[in-house]
Length: 400
Image: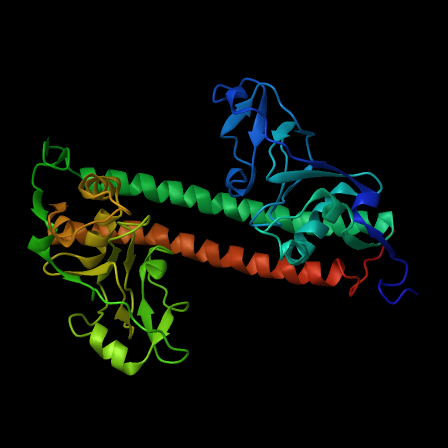
């Protein structure tokens, strides 16, 4: 037995078992958005969430990847992997890989599993990248073909469950978006409507500004010092990562910095946090529990007064709320939403009982999304553990 590979496995390299096509970008005057020619993929930005997203076509393709080729990003970030749904043109940010003496589905799983090692190969370059020679020389330990096929079938079946779960999340998100649009503009059970500064709304609703129904508090305009131990500081990073605030990944500050940054604001359940500056201006996060943290730069807090907290948060996340923010943003070196603009955002106000019903309906779908997202996280962890067992030979599969 070779000590570098499990019993019965062989040591090889990628170029010996697969054909590689390194991408080359065609002339930009051959690009189009009307479907003329082949879909053109350039890099990770084109990968999409599950399948490559066609953003542009190329009428005179240079390098072509056949259907079911493995797409591999060779420039930073190195190692993202996908499968071509159709024959396509690939640019210099990608390579296409097709197995010649290895099962294609197994190779796809294997490259996903070892992609971090390609990143190590890329280190030391002027910018992170791997070239064709480095790709072809990349070492692989491979089981016999029947074992490859069995492993690929097992992992692909998990992928199918993961894909169905992702699809379920997408459908629930679409449902929530549609529900928000319907409930936040038409309410529940209304038959008479009127024009308003935020569009057509039920006749019995009012329209107010945020500062009529909430206290808006700015964060400190100081650069903090971070600490290895201490108390969390919530920044734009945490606000943009999800609708419900998650402080688990927040940076830490010492007690002196915490006291300084909580001088004007102490977080409270029901507050909405908003990012004011940068590419994620207008992103919001709802505080659904009692947390101890301080608020970092370029953020603000909106504390509801006499309005359902969840309803206010939902409206700020709605199409109308986002549109108002985009209209109010000042574009300079980076987009900026002033505190004054936040206070002047217009909000349609149903009776308090209807506010609660609307927010409850939206929250029920949000909770379903969170449950399915947790399921997806669990599936991804399970698949990673399965890959560790099967793709290293730690656990061997029985082949009929």
